[in-house]
Length: 596
Image: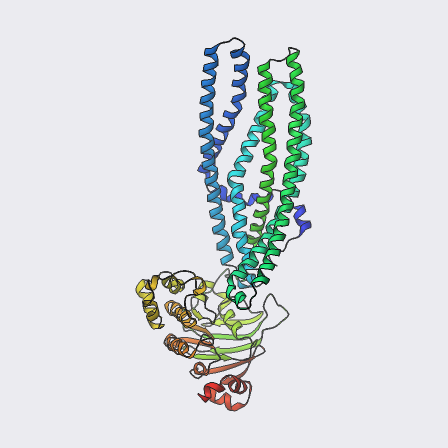
């Protein structure tokens, strides 16, 4: 099921801060930071709570007695308290922000590690842009909550509780009025908080959809411009961000309403209580300093409670983000290592066998791609796979690499069912050169070394020389350190293919998978790439999906696929004279080459 799917009824039922509990294990990794934050948090709160008592003493004793020395000493104390408050607040900020940064770094690392290991079936039904949005926007929201927002919540909770306690110590009668008014504030706070979280979750989902489309459009910039589709793309994206804005506006409106409602109730209550206290002072039942102390504690408690309403809204947003990330972390890969894996034989012979394999993609379970497919490829043999589009040729590679598991039947490497070996063991025996080469936005050297992280500079250069890539790499300004842009936009198609071949050569795997590696190249590029491939195929078991006659003629065998089955098998000469599917393909696709 796509992770982007949501159910509003379920969201309303889960409208709480419970998803934030998933962050607890990350917090517990840093007990020293937590202790430091708590110490300075308490120190700042306690220091703040001492200020009203000092103010009462100044009012009751300093002014009435006209004692300047007394006033000076108390203001000196107040200055000292202010300095302690400033230092403790600064240290509190340092610790809590550092905690937020550490937690979000770990969370991002775990999320990326998890999604990097999910099977291709997951990405068949989920858009990469939406996943990236969760990895960026949602983690940023959580960082704010774990750091500053959580700290503010604790600080204001302590100030609110401490303020209420000191209010009772100062005046029990006036404090009773406060207690009566608390339910009138707390109950709407909870109700509004649920609405905020629900709307915030919807806003985050809507924004993720907009970013997903933006990612797709940016990756296809050349296609957009080639078809003059910039306005169409902009219109669709504008509509998406407008929807995201509308969702965000609803969330902000709810938060603003909550803030207005809470602060209005709190401060109206404070005014009423102060009116009663003022009459007590006039009646002689309370000193002016005591009323001032009670006033300050009331403001502290009320202000803290009002701030908590905003903090609760922010935590609700973070809870929505945590829930979305939790859904992503709960996704399980369809392809897992077995509990008791079998080690593949060493050294590898590179044999491959399909035995009565049926397969349908998880996203299309009713459409069978392979139908009771059986064949065997011997060690060191080169086999070409040909057939019409949709025959299931590329699916073979996905099953050999165990991107998917067969619906039924077995795929074996060196006589062992790939499902019984570890993914690392199975994939270590294969190197693939695809038609659509993946080039990363890094240096030539890093792109080649992607297949073997421990490769030395000499290893990289040797692979590049054998792949006939060294010549054009040396012509670059920085040689192997040259940056080649996202998706290798600074390289030609033939150069990208040779980088991919060098990558495969560096891996030095016993099984080579070539997926139409020369089909999109011009004659000169194809010649160079084919020479590199010929070197790469030496002493390796090779499966070639190809349309070019020059590639197929070098195969020991040709397997012709149609509708998920092997329908013909033989050499070019025998199949061409048989008058079957291969002969028709040869006539249609290879006629120009044959004439040449």
